Image (cartoon, rainbow, N blue to C red; front, top):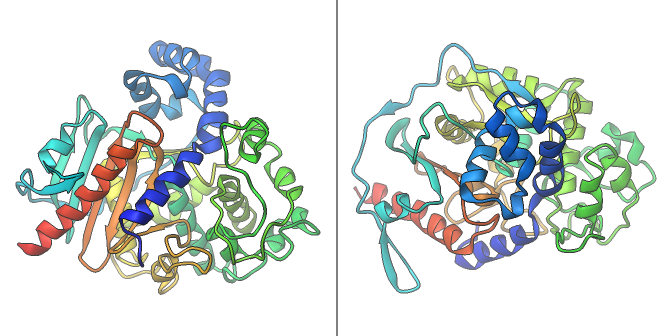
Amino acid sequence: MIFNQASMAHWIKMKGKDVMPQLLIVLFSVFLNTALMAEDPTVQAEAAETSLLFASPAERRVMFRSIAQIAPSRKIEAGASPYPLESKPMDLGDVTFALEGKKFTLSDFLTEDAVMGMIVVKDDNILLEHYAEDMTEESVWVSFSVTKSLSSMLIGAAIQDGYIQSVDEPVVHYLPRLRGTSYENSTIRHVLNMASGVRWNEDYADPESDVSKAGADNGLTLVSYLADLPIDAEPGKKFNYNTGETNLVGEILRSAIGNNASTYLTHKIWQPFGMEFDANWMLGVAGGGELGGCCISATLRDYARLGVFALNDGQLRDGTRVLPENWMHDSTTPSEGYEGYGYLWWLFDPGYSALGIFGQRIQVFPDDGIVIAVQSNATAAVDTLYHAHQHLVVNAIRDHLLAD
Protein backbone atom coordinates (compact mmCIF):
# COMPACT_ATOMS: atom_id res chain seq x y z
CA MET A 1 0.00 0.00 0.00
CA ILE A 2 1.81 3.11 -1.22
CA PHE A 3 -0.01 6.20 -0.03
CA ASN A 4 2.24 8.82 1.57
CA GLN A 5 2.54 12.61 1.29
CA ALA A 6 1.85 12.78 -2.45
CA SER A 7 -1.14 10.52 -2.11
CA MET A 8 -2.37 12.47 0.90
CA ALA A 9 -2.29 15.55 -1.29
CA HIS A 10 -4.37 13.61 -3.83
CA TRP A 11 -6.86 12.69 -1.09
CA ILE A 12 -7.14 16.35 -0.13
CA LYS A 13 -7.71 17.26 -3.77
CA MET A 14 -10.37 14.57 -4.13
CA LYS A 15 -12.11 15.57 -0.92
CA GLY A 16 -11.97 19.20 -1.96
CA LYS A 17 -14.48 18.18 -4.61
CA ASP A 18 -16.27 15.87 -2.20
CA VAL A 19 -17.99 18.40 0.02
CA MET A 20 -20.56 15.61 0.36
CA PRO A 21 -24.07 15.75 -1.05
CA GLN A 22 -25.31 14.21 2.17
CA LEU A 23 -23.72 17.10 4.00
CA LEU A 24 -23.93 20.22 1.91
CA ILE A 25 -27.17 19.42 0.13
CA VAL A 26 -29.11 16.60 1.75
CA LEU A 27 -27.87 17.14 5.30
CA PHE A 28 -28.40 20.85 5.43
CA SER A 29 -31.68 20.75 3.55
CA VAL A 30 -32.83 18.22 6.14
CA PHE A 31 -31.61 20.60 8.86
CA LEU A 32 -33.75 23.36 7.42
CA ASN A 33 -36.78 21.12 6.94
CA THR A 34 -36.68 19.50 10.38
CA ALA A 35 -35.06 22.05 12.67
CA LEU A 36 -38.39 22.91 14.25
CA MET A 37 -38.68 19.28 15.38
CA ALA A 38 -35.58 19.60 17.55
CA GLU A 39 -36.22 19.54 21.29
CA ASP A 40 -33.52 22.11 22.07
CA PRO A 41 -34.54 25.63 20.98
CA THR A 42 -30.90 26.62 20.68
CA VAL A 43 -30.28 23.76 18.28
CA GLN A 44 -33.39 24.78 16.33
CA ALA A 45 -32.12 28.30 15.89
CA GLU A 46 -28.57 27.29 15.03
CA ALA A 47 -29.71 24.73 12.48
CA ALA A 48 -32.38 26.84 10.86
CA GLU A 49 -30.35 30.00 10.47
CA THR A 50 -26.89 28.74 9.61
CA SER A 51 -25.55 27.62 6.25
CA LEU A 52 -22.91 25.00 6.84
CA LEU A 53 -20.58 26.49 4.25
CA PHE A 54 -20.47 29.75 6.16
CA ALA A 55 -21.09 28.51 9.69
CA SER A 56 -18.75 29.57 12.44
CA PRO A 57 -16.86 26.92 14.40
CA ALA A 58 -19.26 27.47 17.31
CA GLU A 59 -22.28 26.92 15.08
CA ARG A 60 -20.76 23.77 13.59
CA ARG A 61 -20.10 22.41 17.07
CA VAL A 62 -23.84 22.55 17.69
CA MET A 63 -24.60 20.80 14.40
CA PHE A 64 -21.91 18.14 14.61
CA ARG A 65 -23.02 17.07 18.10
CA SER A 66 -26.75 17.26 17.44
CA ILE A 67 -27.54 15.41 14.22
CA ALA A 68 -30.14 13.16 15.87
CA GLN A 69 -31.95 16.20 17.27
CA ILE A 70 -32.11 18.17 14.02
CA ALA A 71 -32.31 15.55 11.27
CA PRO A 72 -34.12 12.24 10.78
CA SER A 73 -31.90 9.56 12.30
CA ARG A 74 -32.09 5.99 13.53
CA LYS A 75 -30.60 4.77 16.81
CA ILE A 76 -27.74 2.27 16.96
CA GLU A 77 -28.07 0.65 20.38
CA ALA A 78 -25.14 -0.20 22.63
CA GLY A 79 -24.90 -3.51 24.46
CA ALA A 80 -24.52 -4.28 28.15
CA SER A 81 -20.86 -5.34 28.08
CA PRO A 82 -18.45 -2.78 26.60
CA TYR A 83 -15.29 -4.02 24.94
CA PRO A 84 -12.64 -3.38 27.63
CA LEU A 85 -10.16 -0.64 26.92
CA GLU A 86 -7.89 -0.17 29.93
CA SER A 87 -6.69 3.34 30.71
CA LYS A 88 -2.88 3.43 30.83
CA PRO A 89 -2.01 7.09 30.23
CA MET A 90 1.33 7.77 28.59
CA ASP A 91 2.96 11.17 28.23
CA LEU A 92 3.00 11.68 24.48
CA GLY A 93 3.08 15.46 24.54
CA ASP A 94 6.64 15.64 23.25
CA VAL A 95 6.00 13.46 20.20
CA THR A 96 7.32 15.60 17.37
CA PHE A 97 6.69 15.97 13.67
CA ALA A 98 7.90 18.43 11.05
CA LEU A 99 5.96 20.32 8.41
CA GLU A 100 7.42 22.80 5.94
CA GLY A 101 10.65 23.00 7.89
CA LYS A 102 8.96 23.69 11.23
CA LYS A 103 8.87 21.32 14.19
CA PHE A 104 5.64 20.66 16.07
CA THR A 105 4.70 18.50 19.05
CA LEU A 106 1.58 16.51 19.78
CA SER A 107 0.79 19.10 22.44
CA ASP A 108 0.83 21.76 19.72
CA PHE A 109 -1.59 19.69 17.66
CA LEU A 110 -3.98 19.09 20.55
CA THR A 111 -4.24 22.82 21.22
CA GLU A 112 -5.35 23.55 17.66
CA ASP A 113 -8.91 24.84 17.63
CA ALA A 114 -9.92 22.13 15.17
CA VAL A 115 -9.18 19.20 17.51
CA MET A 116 -12.28 18.24 19.49
CA GLY A 117 -11.11 14.83 20.63
CA MET A 118 -8.28 12.36 20.14
CA ILE A 119 -7.71 8.85 21.45
CA VAL A 120 -4.70 6.56 21.06
CA VAL A 121 -5.16 2.83 21.69
CA LYS A 122 -2.43 0.20 21.58
CA ASP A 123 -3.03 -3.46 22.45
CA ASP A 124 -6.42 -2.53 23.98
CA ASN A 125 -4.87 0.09 26.26
CA ILE A 126 -5.87 3.76 26.09
CA LEU A 127 -2.57 5.64 26.09
CA LEU A 128 -4.07 9.06 25.43
CA GLU A 129 -7.63 10.37 25.61
CA HIS A 130 -8.05 14.08 25.00
CA TYR A 131 -11.21 16.19 24.79
CA ALA A 132 -11.54 19.87 24.01
CA GLU A 133 -13.93 22.35 25.56
CA ASP A 134 -16.95 20.56 27.06
CA MET A 135 -16.56 17.34 25.07
CA THR A 136 -16.46 14.15 27.18
CA GLU A 137 -16.26 10.40 26.68
CA GLU A 138 -20.07 10.42 26.29
CA SER A 139 -20.20 13.09 23.57
CA VAL A 140 -21.28 11.89 20.14
CA TRP A 141 -19.80 13.57 17.07
CA VAL A 142 -20.73 13.09 13.43
CA SER A 143 -18.27 11.04 11.38
CA PHE A 144 -19.23 12.16 7.87
CA SER A 145 -17.44 9.91 5.32
CA VAL A 146 -15.97 7.66 8.02
CA THR A 147 -19.38 6.03 7.66
CA LYS A 148 -18.40 4.76 4.21
CA SER A 149 -15.89 2.38 5.77
CA LEU A 150 -18.53 1.06 8.18
CA SER A 151 -20.90 0.47 5.26
CA SER A 152 -18.13 -1.59 3.69
CA MET A 153 -17.93 -3.67 6.88
CA LEU A 154 -21.68 -4.27 6.76
CA ILE A 155 -21.40 -5.59 3.22
CA GLY A 156 -18.81 -8.01 4.61
CA ALA A 157 -21.18 -9.01 7.41
CA ALA A 158 -23.95 -9.62 4.87
CA ILE A 159 -21.60 -11.93 2.95
CA GLN A 160 -20.72 -13.79 6.15
CA ASP A 161 -24.44 -14.19 6.89
CA GLY A 162 -25.19 -15.43 3.39
CA TYR A 163 -27.35 -12.49 2.34
CA ILE A 164 -24.78 -11.65 -0.34
CA GLN A 165 -22.77 -14.38 -2.04
CA SER A 166 -19.65 -12.36 -2.92
CA VAL A 167 -18.43 -8.91 -3.92
CA ASP A 168 -18.32 -10.17 -7.50
CA GLU A 169 -22.08 -10.43 -7.70
CA PRO A 170 -23.68 -7.93 -10.07
CA VAL A 171 -25.24 -4.82 -8.60
CA VAL A 172 -28.40 -5.47 -10.60
CA HIS A 173 -29.02 -8.71 -8.72
CA TYR A 174 -29.93 -6.59 -5.67
CA LEU A 175 -31.15 -3.50 -7.52
CA PRO A 176 -33.00 -4.80 -10.59
CA ARG A 177 -34.11 -1.25 -11.36
CA LEU A 178 -30.60 -0.77 -12.74
CA ARG A 179 -30.87 -3.50 -15.38
CA GLY A 180 -30.20 -2.12 -18.84
CA THR A 181 -28.32 0.89 -17.43
CA SER A 182 -24.62 1.73 -17.17
CA TYR A 183 -24.55 -0.45 -14.03
CA GLU A 184 -25.48 -3.59 -15.98
CA ASN A 185 -21.90 -4.91 -15.81
CA SER A 186 -20.89 -3.40 -12.46
CA THR A 187 -20.29 -5.63 -9.45
CA ILE A 188 -20.44 -4.85 -5.76
CA ARG A 189 -16.63 -4.87 -5.79
CA HIS A 190 -16.59 -2.15 -8.44
CA VAL A 191 -18.89 0.05 -6.37
CA LEU A 192 -16.89 -0.54 -3.16
CA ASN A 193 -13.74 0.45 -5.06
CA MET A 194 -15.49 3.51 -6.59
CA ALA A 195 -14.60 2.06 -9.97
CA SER A 196 -17.96 1.32 -11.58
CA GLY A 197 -16.93 3.23 -14.69
CA VAL A 198 -20.14 5.26 -14.57
CA ARG A 199 -19.59 8.93 -15.33
CA TRP A 200 -20.06 11.14 -12.28
CA ASN A 201 -19.18 14.78 -11.70
CA GLU A 202 -18.48 15.60 -8.04
CA ASP A 203 -17.93 19.35 -8.57
CA TYR A 204 -19.89 21.26 -5.94
CA ALA A 205 -19.17 24.60 -7.53
CA ASP A 206 -21.19 23.53 -10.57
CA PRO A 207 -24.97 23.49 -10.02
CA GLU A 208 -25.25 21.22 -13.07
CA SER A 209 -22.87 18.60 -11.65
CA ASP A 210 -24.21 15.18 -10.78
CA VAL A 211 -23.53 15.64 -7.10
CA SER A 212 -25.54 18.87 -7.05
CA LYS A 213 -28.47 17.54 -9.05
CA ALA A 214 -28.63 14.19 -7.27
CA GLY A 215 -28.40 15.87 -3.89
CA ALA A 216 -31.22 18.21 -4.77
CA ASP A 217 -33.46 15.15 -5.01
CA ASN A 218 -32.86 14.66 -1.27
CA GLY A 219 -32.22 10.96 -1.79
CA LEU A 220 -35.71 10.18 -3.03
CA THR A 221 -34.72 9.31 -6.59
CA LEU A 222 -31.03 8.46 -6.20
CA VAL A 223 -31.23 5.07 -7.89
CA SER A 224 -33.24 6.43 -10.81
CA TYR A 225 -30.80 9.33 -11.15
CA LEU A 226 -27.80 6.99 -11.22
CA ALA A 227 -29.62 4.80 -13.74
CA ASP A 228 -29.57 7.62 -16.29
CA LEU A 229 -25.82 8.25 -16.15
CA PRO A 230 -23.60 7.22 -19.08
CA ILE A 231 -20.69 4.80 -18.91
CA ASP A 232 -17.28 6.47 -18.93
CA ALA A 233 -14.84 3.57 -18.48
CA GLU A 234 -14.72 -0.19 -18.26
CA PRO A 235 -15.82 -1.28 -14.77
CA GLY A 236 -12.89 -1.81 -12.43
CA LYS A 237 -10.39 0.19 -14.48
CA LYS A 238 -10.86 3.79 -13.33
CA PHE A 239 -11.19 5.25 -9.83
CA ASN A 240 -13.69 8.09 -9.64
CA TYR A 241 -14.75 9.39 -6.24
CA ASN A 242 -18.52 9.09 -6.28
CA THR A 243 -20.51 9.81 -3.16
CA GLY A 244 -23.73 8.85 -4.91
CA GLU A 245 -22.48 5.30 -5.26
CA THR A 246 -21.70 5.03 -1.57
CA ASN A 247 -25.38 5.59 -0.93
CA LEU A 248 -25.97 2.91 -3.56
CA VAL A 249 -23.98 0.58 -1.29
CA GLY A 250 -26.54 1.32 1.40
CA GLU A 251 -29.35 0.45 -1.01
CA ILE A 252 -27.65 -2.83 -1.94
CA LEU A 253 -27.29 -3.70 1.75
CA ARG A 254 -30.90 -2.88 2.54
CA SER A 255 -32.13 -4.95 -0.40
CA ALA A 256 -29.94 -7.91 0.56
CA ILE A 257 -30.74 -8.10 4.27
CA GLY A 258 -34.36 -6.97 4.11
CA ASN A 259 -33.81 -4.60 7.01
CA ASN A 260 -32.40 -1.18 7.80
CA ALA A 261 -28.67 -0.63 8.20
CA SER A 262 -28.82 0.75 11.75
CA THR A 263 -30.56 -2.33 13.11
CA TYR A 264 -28.14 -4.59 11.27
CA LEU A 265 -25.15 -2.62 12.60
CA THR A 266 -26.62 -2.84 16.11
CA HIS A 267 -27.04 -6.61 15.99
CA LYS A 268 -23.87 -7.50 14.09
CA ILE A 269 -21.21 -5.17 15.52
CA TRP A 270 -22.36 -2.50 17.97
CA GLN A 271 -23.82 -4.76 20.65
CA PRO A 272 -21.88 -8.03 20.23
CA PHE A 273 -18.47 -6.38 19.92
CA GLY A 274 -19.23 -4.12 22.84
CA MET A 275 -19.63 -0.48 21.90
CA GLU A 276 -20.08 1.52 25.07
CA PHE A 277 -22.63 4.12 24.01
CA ASP A 278 -25.64 4.46 21.73
CA ALA A 279 -24.98 6.03 18.36
CA ASN A 280 -27.22 7.23 15.54
CA TRP A 281 -27.23 7.17 11.75
CA MET A 282 -28.74 9.94 9.68
CA LEU A 283 -31.46 9.03 7.17
CA GLY A 284 -31.85 10.37 3.65
CA VAL A 285 -35.48 11.20 4.42
CA ALA A 286 -37.66 10.67 7.47
CA GLY A 287 -38.54 7.00 7.75
CA GLY A 288 -36.23 6.11 4.87
CA GLY A 289 -32.90 4.37 4.56
CA GLU A 290 -29.60 5.36 6.09
CA LEU A 291 -27.09 7.31 4.02
CA GLY A 292 -24.53 4.65 3.15
CA GLY A 293 -21.84 7.28 2.74
CA CYS A 294 -22.41 9.62 5.62
CA CYS A 295 -23.28 10.63 9.07
CA ILE A 296 -23.05 8.02 11.78
CA SER A 297 -22.60 9.90 15.06
CA ALA A 298 -20.78 8.11 17.88
CA THR A 299 -18.38 8.68 20.75
CA LEU A 300 -14.63 8.87 20.43
CA ARG A 301 -14.08 5.65 22.38
CA ASP A 302 -16.50 3.77 20.15
CA TYR A 303 -14.80 5.06 17.01
CA ALA A 304 -11.61 3.62 18.51
CA ARG A 305 -13.39 0.33 19.19
CA LEU A 306 -14.41 0.18 15.53
CA GLY A 307 -10.73 0.44 14.69
CA VAL A 308 -10.01 -2.38 17.14
CA PHE A 309 -12.76 -4.43 15.49
CA ALA A 310 -10.94 -3.92 12.19
CA LEU A 311 -7.64 -4.86 13.85
CA ASN A 312 -9.29 -8.07 15.03
CA ASP A 313 -10.21 -8.88 11.41
CA GLY A 314 -13.91 -8.55 12.14
CA GLN A 315 -14.09 -11.04 14.99
CA LEU A 316 -15.85 -10.77 18.34
CA ARG A 317 -14.06 -11.31 21.64
CA ASP A 318 -15.00 -15.00 21.66
CA GLY A 319 -13.60 -15.51 18.15
CA THR A 320 -16.97 -15.48 16.40
CA ARG A 321 -16.60 -14.14 12.89
CA VAL A 322 -18.76 -11.18 11.91
CA LEU A 323 -16.79 -10.49 8.74
CA PRO A 324 -15.48 -13.18 6.40
CA GLU A 325 -11.95 -14.43 6.94
CA ASN A 326 -9.48 -12.01 5.32
CA TRP A 327 -12.24 -9.44 4.73
CA MET A 328 -10.21 -6.60 6.22
CA HIS A 329 -7.15 -7.68 4.25
CA ASP A 330 -9.19 -7.67 1.05
CA SER A 331 -10.85 -4.37 2.01
CA THR A 332 -7.48 -2.70 2.42
CA THR A 333 -5.83 -4.13 -0.69
CA PRO A 334 -5.38 -1.53 -3.45
CA SER A 335 -7.94 -1.66 -6.22
CA GLU A 336 -6.96 -2.06 -9.84
CA GLY A 337 -8.17 1.45 -10.56
CA TYR A 338 -6.31 3.25 -7.75
CA GLU A 339 -3.69 2.03 -5.32
CA GLY A 340 -4.75 4.45 -2.59
CA TYR A 341 -8.25 3.04 -2.13
CA GLY A 342 -9.79 -0.30 -1.15
CA TYR A 343 -13.37 -1.19 -0.21
CA LEU A 344 -14.29 2.34 0.93
CA TRP A 345 -11.07 2.60 3.00
CA TRP A 346 -8.22 5.00 2.27
CA LEU A 347 -4.91 3.15 2.09
CA PHE A 348 -1.66 4.48 3.49
CA ASP A 349 1.81 3.08 4.02
CA PRO A 350 1.64 2.00 6.75
CA GLY A 351 -1.95 1.38 7.74
CA TYR A 352 -5.36 2.45 6.51
CA SER A 353 -7.95 5.04 7.43
CA ALA A 354 -11.62 5.88 7.52
CA LEU A 355 -11.69 9.59 6.74
CA GLY A 356 -14.38 12.26 6.86
CA ILE A 357 -14.50 15.92 6.01
CA PHE A 358 -13.79 18.56 8.64
CA GLY A 359 -11.03 16.24 9.91
CA GLN A 360 -12.74 13.04 11.12
CA ARG A 361 -10.46 10.00 11.23
CA ILE A 362 -10.06 6.42 12.37
CA GLN A 363 -6.46 5.42 11.70
CA VAL A 364 -5.57 1.73 11.92
CA PHE A 365 -2.03 0.35 11.99
CA PRO A 366 -2.84 -3.37 11.74
CA ASP A 367 0.72 -4.66 12.08
CA ASP A 368 1.30 -2.67 15.26
CA GLY A 369 -1.95 -3.04 17.21
CA ILE A 370 -2.48 0.73 17.14
CA VAL A 371 -5.71 2.66 16.56
CA ILE A 372 -5.97 6.45 16.62
CA ALA A 373 -9.32 8.24 16.32
CA VAL A 374 -9.79 11.97 15.92
CA GLN A 375 -12.91 14.13 16.12
CA SER A 376 -12.44 17.51 14.49
CA ASN A 377 -14.06 20.82 13.67
CA ALA A 378 -11.62 22.05 11.04
CA THR A 379 -11.95 25.54 9.59
CA ALA A 380 -13.26 24.15 6.30
CA ALA A 381 -14.56 20.90 4.89
CA VAL A 382 -11.06 20.37 3.56
CA ASP A 383 -8.49 22.25 5.63
CA THR A 384 -5.24 21.40 3.84
CA LEU A 385 -2.90 22.46 6.64
CA TYR A 386 -4.90 20.71 9.35
CA HIS A 387 -5.13 17.50 7.33
CA ALA A 388 -1.37 17.60 6.82
CA HIS A 389 -0.80 18.10 10.56
CA GLN A 390 -3.18 15.27 11.40
CA HIS A 391 -1.64 12.85 8.91
CA LEU A 392 1.86 13.56 10.21
CA VAL A 393 0.95 13.39 13.88
CA VAL A 394 -0.73 9.97 13.73
CA ASN A 395 2.36 8.56 12.05
CA ALA A 396 4.65 10.30 14.55
CA ILE A 397 2.69 8.72 17.41
CA ARG A 398 3.07 5.28 15.82
CA ASP A 399 6.81 5.78 15.34
CA HIS A 400 7.19 6.93 18.96
CA LEU A 401 5.29 3.94 20.35
CA LEU A 402 7.27 1.46 18.28
CA ALA A 403 10.55 3.05 19.34
CA ASP A 404 9.80 2.62 23.06
